[in-house]
Length: 550
Image (tube, rainbow, N blue to C red):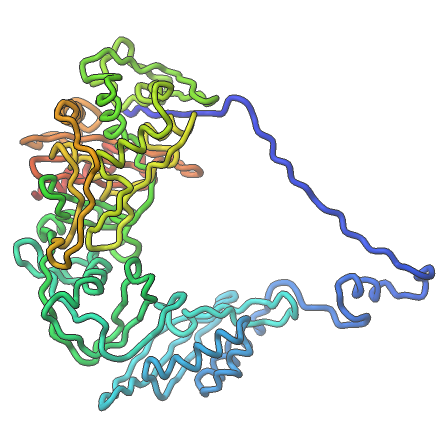
């Protein structure tokens, strides 16, 4: 049964908005000899009698006409003329001038499409002329026309994507020897991992090449690629757009398991914005990570979402460490609890009278945790998450990751943090690590490539989990998996199992984000399915499928 919290502020708040009044005074004379339009022009800082500045939505003719002039000037090689038609002539001129030189483009042709509102799509066709190679290259992109605030004239809104859709701030499109050799990524058993077989790994494979390509015996090829700024490469690796001359791929062994990876990809497919991760608790090795849709942001490892009741794993460990509770200790869950002026209410005003902490944990009854807030210091949860579970440390996984955040909060926000709301932020990687830490009895930083490849140091938890606490947590998660909120999803799975459900409320969202994390033997997994409802029924089947593949 889902037990959640609804809370409302006792008291009130007032927002004051200050406004200003503008005016003008005519000095000397009655002003009878000045025409009203001249007065208005003077007010606006324009010479008397100056024509009115155009305003309002752009007409179709203005959009297509401005875009056409810009594209004609660009393909004619008149960079300054084209730049003058943008809202940032200096930046545009520099970019338009450098573009064909850096990319080695010749014979540029641009074919505009029809305007859609203020946007115009177009196709760019060119020849790549690099050393003795000459190869055709084409792509589609678009521009936006907007009205200049000062002149009222239509202008192309300058952005790097005007040149190529893959370009962002600071990016350069280059043709030449790639900065890193191509890689042949293989899983833990030697099976090759390709973008074609595992589309969800496309961004991960690019990151691995960028970081580890030079550590292999591979040789760079000649490519058209997006060169990201050095400071951005960790989060946005270089991206190959076309291979002119293949290099020699260097073999890079990963910790992934192709079978588990395929199961993870299948499990999240068709669930909008769902993501999942699987880990090996005894080592921290990442076995799988998948997102839906397959292409785009890597929420599985880089997402920043409230984890909901999966955070109760950390909270429970803290309460047990402090001697504030134990699995078999009486620990009722009241209908209402007030902390810091906020009244927290369990879903449907439910409660667990005369219950134990184990019963409240298995039922995920929020107020059993929130009621402990007055007995805690503001930084207790932050310290427990960091020092025992490694959350918020600088993880060196081998790919870009967000390593979780449990900020120090007070009063009602601190109470909300105890159930994974407030300012707590995680993703499937960090939540899977919570379950893995419980199963292992201690934290192992997740990683996807062995640290021996590049000599990096893995993060270590400053404090070991107490053996009694580890044992208690395993009993709590086992109870949840066998007779609590996770029982339906975990039904029929044999072996050493444990689980925790979560449902995280999001402002403006009708249904909460569904979370689920569990372990089975030496595999732990976590998944989030945004805006879907209860964790057990929505994210639970995803995790079950992954654990079944192990």
